[in-house]
Image: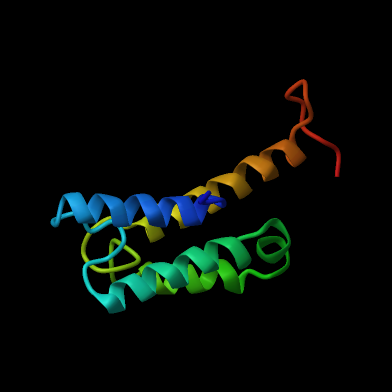
Amino acid sequence: MTITGAHAVARHLCRLAASHTPSSSLYGKSSLEKAEVDHWLEYSLTSLTEQSVAKNEDVLGYLDRVLAPRVYLVGYDLTLADLAVFAALRGEVERETKVLFNEEGKESSF
């Protein structure tokens, strides 16, 4: 069997880590936390895309409101959810930077 897709592979590795190291909480500690991690993985794939972020500031506003009272997206530890959302946001910043600056590093004229 072959596992494809970045999030599917990441889930598998987190579950594997938890089976060998019970204190590992990258995929959440409880079934509720695991469901929350899945929510954020889906959010990073669907809502944090170039089109969604550019058209709708509510996408980032939602993330801002969720993180206002806490440090991590799920529970009290770093999880796969934090890593996936960070990676999606980082990808958008890199794409925006390429749009704003051309190959030579000069600012584009808009």
